[in-house]
Image (spheres, one colour):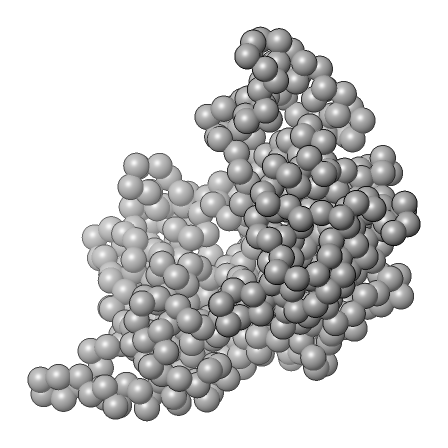
Amino acid sequence: MHSDIAIELTDVSKRFGAVRANDKVNLCVESGTIHGIVGENGAGKSTLMSILYGFYQYDTGHIEVFGKAQYFNNSREALAAGVGMVHQHFMLVEPFTVLENVMLGNEGGKLLKEGRIAAETELKRLANEYGLAVDLHARVSSLSVGLQQRVEILKALYRGAKILILDEPTGVLTPQETAELFRILESLKAQGVTILLITHKLQEIMAITDNVSVMRAGTMVAHRKTSETSKEDIAELMVGRKVLLQVDKIDANVGEALIKVDNLTIKDAQGVERVKQVSFEVKAGEVVGIAGVSGNGQSELLEALSGITKVNSGSMIINGHEVSRKKPASPERMRIRGLAHVPEDRHHMGMVTSFSASESSILGYHNDKEYNGRFIMSRSKVRDYCRKLMDAFDVRPRDPDLKSANFSGGNQQKLILAREMERNPDILLVGQPTRGVDIGAIEFIHRRIIEMRDAGKAILLVSVELEEIISVSDRVLVMCDGVITGEVPAAEATERELGLLMTSSDAQKEVVA
């Protein structure tokens, strides 16, 4: 192995029972480069990275790190060899300070004070060298998501990582935080750190990586120099067919407002205002997107509109029916009024994973006469209906009796979308429609949303994916800290402009200026 190669995998395989998660995978990563790994859900990316970081052990094959053969039994051994990982969900203790988090498990001897001084000195050096400025004495709970991610990177570097694996690192970042992360990655690369970037965002692959490797069904199907490929080429390699990345749509033909929200305020169980005097409309024949970092009131807004959460003040008119504190609604009543809801969290609100697909396919509609006789529900009618939904939305496998948990995330999402969309509602609320969904299914879901819009439905779309918001929506509203900070026609929207509106309720002034 050459000295300029950081990682070399040869015929690496890993089984989980009958499932071959990795099948004779080959990968060569040059030192001091940013190397992207892409593939659909279940392609084997996470398993491969878990093997590299010592979470799993490979069954057969060979791994070399900086020219030395390795078989990691745990992540401590991987770190000792120079391999660090920043997880999609941060592994930080929120009440602890930055310094305490970095030292945790690596205190530097019996005398904590001496270890603390040495750690602080080293962390300041690393922060200066790699442009990772962060207050070492700040509590992690007080830091933004972008700064928490810096802490995770610092933690890995402090433990001696020369190879850094980043798993979906921009999933919870604003565009500005993403740009800052990319600056940090370029700085790390310039200092000789090797970076493995796992992401489903093809525009990020094109923007930051030197090379990209594509996985499909547990195998490595292609390696490309990023400068010599395109998003379309990578998408086709991932899926095995051509994929339409741009949403194809005609101009919206809008009608009357089917959702009218006026000075709406929603409080959570602790009495904290999550939605603050919000007003907007959604008209028939248009898609209105709500952009924002998760946790800024979008979830509570969807729950209020769908009848799950009560209104504290203000009012809503849904398809001609008023909803307010004095005139509450329920999810059942909202459905009767022509509203369908695809919730953000499909596992906790969209389906019961222990139920069969046929049972999940009628949740919320299970009292309908078409499935029920005088005394009992007709299982055969429910199965037949589920098969019809599966055919219409290409849900695989076409097995109404299979447990909901045993479908892939994309097929679970298509089943929920089918359940809600095939009811032909006047209004559709869609939360994170493509979260955890494969690129081929994303294309399908977007096309279905546009078909509903063209059929004259009013659609409210909530997504943290700005590319999705801009391409699917006709108008974009931005929420930050429970407030709508701006409205932009989707055709004129840029990720930078939306990102500024997403960062604070004062951001609108900066955009206008």
